[in-house]
Image 1 (cartoon, rainbow, N blue to C red):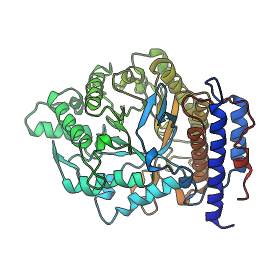
Image 2 (cartoon, one colour):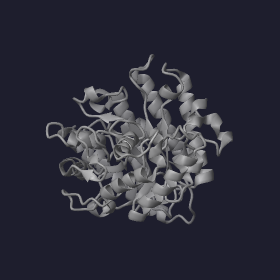
Image 3 (tube, rainbow, N blue to C red):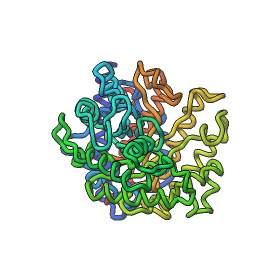
Image 4 (cartoon, rainbow, N blue to C red):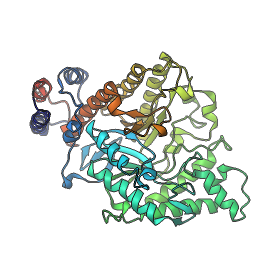
Length: 472
C-alpha cells in the first residue's frame, strides 16, 4: 500500500483512539497512574503491532501540533506540562547547529537534522547558544557580538526548529575549551589585567561573572530577525542551561560552584520567569550526600566540585540534568557492567529527584562511542533500550524520570564532525526503529489525559484498534 495512505490511516486511528480515551479519562473520579499489567500489555501491543515508523514523515506526523498548542513548557511538581497536559521528552543533542548555520554551504544540514529527527518523533534538541572568541564566534569579545552570526545562525536555528515542532534546550557556555567556554572568559579577563590563576576563577571573579551575565542578557533579550519573537518569549525554547557540564576541580567542597549556580539561576529567572532553567550537570554526587557516592562511576567523580542534590536545590533551578557515559567513566572496553551501571545510575537519580528535589530529571546526554573496544550496533541498541525502559518504568508510575536526549544525531555527510557517538539515522535502521517506538510511546503518554485525569480507568483499552492496525 502507498506509504502516504498508510501514514494517513495510522494518524486517523491514533487521534480517534486518543479522543475516545480522553472521554473515558474525564469520567474518572480519582487521580492515578497506569498499573503494571496495563502498561506491560500496552507496551507489548505497541512492540508487536505498531506500523513501522521508518518513513521519513510518519513520526513527525504523529506529533504534529497546531499553532495554538505551541505554548511554553512548564513544570508541575516532578513533571513537565504543556497547557496543563503532561510532556515527556524524547530528544537529542546536536551541539554544532549554530556553527553550521553560520555558513551558507552547511546551513542545509541544520534543516536536515531537524527533519530527520522529527521523522522518528524526537521533540527536543539540546544545542549551544555560545561560541566565544573562536572560529565563527557569536561573542567576539565580552559583550561584543557578530550580528551576522546571530542573524544567520542562532536566529535561523531557533526558527528552523519550530518548523519541525522541535523545542530547544540552549546551553549558555561551556566548562570545556571547545567553542570558548570558561577558559575564553579567563583569557578575556587576563587581557584586561585581571590577576587570574585558574580557569575556575570563572566561577568566582566578579568581572568574569559580569561577562557571563552580559551574555545571558544578550541572548535572552535577542529579538529573532526571522520570527520577530524575543528569545525569552519564544515557546520554541524549552529551557536555558547555565553551562555544559560545569566542574570546579579547584574546590572539591563544591562551595565555589554552588555560589555561582545560586547567582546565575536567580539572574536568569529575573530576566525570564517564563522559561525553565537547568544547570547542565553530569550528575555526580558530592560531599552533601556521602551515602549516595556509591552510585558514582569512580572515586574521582566526588572530587570535581559538583554535588547533584545540593546543586539542584538552588532557587530558580526547575529540573535536574544527568549525563550517562559508562564508556568514559567505567571502562573503554564494552561490557555488561556498562548496562548495569546505566540502570543503577538512572534509578538513583530518579529516586533522588523524587525524594529530595521534587522535580523532573532529564538524562540530557547519553551514548556510546563506536571507537570503544568491543563496540557494535547491537550493544548501542541495548544501551538505548536500557535508558528508554528505565524511563518508562518511572513514567508509568508518575515518577520524576522526565526524558532523555541522545548524544548525538547527525545528518548524512557530516562524518568529519563525528566524535564516535554520532547516530546517522539513515544508516542505523535498528536504532531508528528503537527511537521511533519510544517516541510513539511517549506521544501516547503525552496525549492520553489532561493533568487532572488519570491512567487507571478500568475500561477496555480504546487504543486496541491502533495497536492491531498493522495493515493500514
